[in-house]
Image 1 (cartoon, chains in turn red, orange):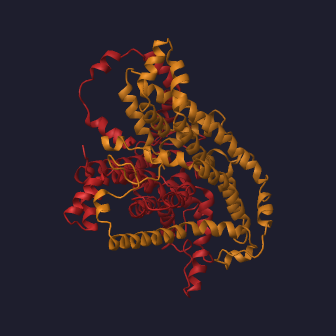
Image 2: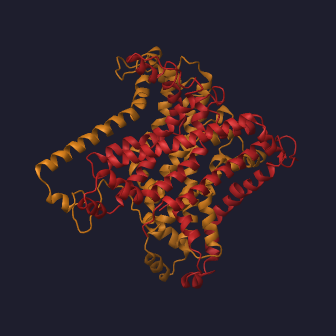
Image 3: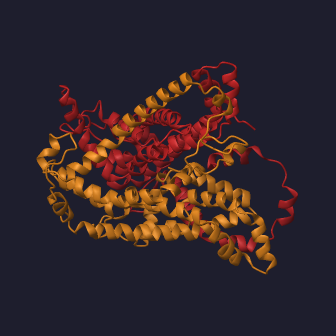
Length: 314
Length: 316
């Protein structure tokens, strides 16, 4: 199913080539490379080339005007003393570690309610899915900026029941929470993946459990959750990778400065400011590699931990 | 993992399938045999509770969007004190005012976005389908390695390559052109879609290729005449997702397009936010809605492909 599934099977399957593969080996080389030409070019020029280049730049001081100057590990040492960077890491980690589990929990909950041929499923599914498509847009970020503003929709509604709400996005203690909510609001796409997974659980398991007198909760913990764990894992990996790169919402809601008082200064926002605001390209490249390492580490931890909680039926 | 790989597309509204049972939506035989009155009543109550939960959640989710639509049709001052959805009169001035509030009429930015979107769709369709054909059907040296790299690039953060990419594109004079947004798509860098198409092609029976080969067809012919016509659903999914993602894409436009002539819709909206004082939410909302409209329409008509696409590859 998934790219992640495919990768993990690839790493597990290390045997010799099959007879078919051996026989066919080399036969289509010319045709294959012609078909792959655009992709190979893209890989070299748009992906791997720039990756190596940014690795090099991370050891330099470079402002686009003068040629890059080698400074060794200076950029990385600077990071140790950069309090705004530490703060941006804290903001990003909070966003990922709160937002992702919350979003997946809502997605799973709604998927469970929606499962089992409830009437009107296509309609509900559309309603829940729509925000996922719109959530990444500037327009929705603008909407968020209004509804969580001091005189925004949320506070207007609160005023109806006599509560004077704070300025959610102008208050540093709630601004990040508002953006996390925006992330939770887009639970529709993991929900659809969960729904697809739930369909795959054979009904006979539930029937057998019912015969044995299992309660709904027992069925959830003993059947649904283990059977769904590969999908949960897949969603978790994807959402974590995606959330670390979140940019647009915080940028628009904060007016581009990650405020108030850096409370929504995501790592990516700080990277953008360093690279494209101050043209400190060396530092920005070093930050990009730190981001890559962090995301890589999280993904690796996920894969290792998955051995203990992800259940494969085969 | 085989379980994951055989996940079917969920474009249907059916419940779980039972082996040997005609009606997919029906209850299990065991439950049916217990179908007495009390059981069906409790089932009805259960369904009712479920509907209540879903309607409540759905309302909370959709309300802000509806409110934005309604507010865009209201005089400005009402936006700060009218949380309801009731409209007393239709105020179109937000739309007319917002449309011409920036350097260019808003239509200019929509045309820019449309150019980038169409170029990206074309690029993704051609380059990704070619790469997918090679990965799914051809044997070649380094296939496993390249396939693994392709999968890894799906997970590569864009920020890692953006600085050198920017340097590269600015050196060849492409800043403030649409090329930096379109050319990567022509080079199949959206590996997601390569993967989606590989999965799809794997599901097409190989006998069809063999038959064409016996008739003397080479790979280009098999690709164009056999595979491509059969993979139209995957192409549609790719086109629709490319449309939505490119239309919404803010980060690359922010970096590469700094000249208002070249602004796409997201950067134009951002310029609008920055230029307006807090009092003109009405026109800001109006243009936001205009900007969401194409995505909404694609969602309405392309939903089936979107949902199939997410369920089979897990893309956003």
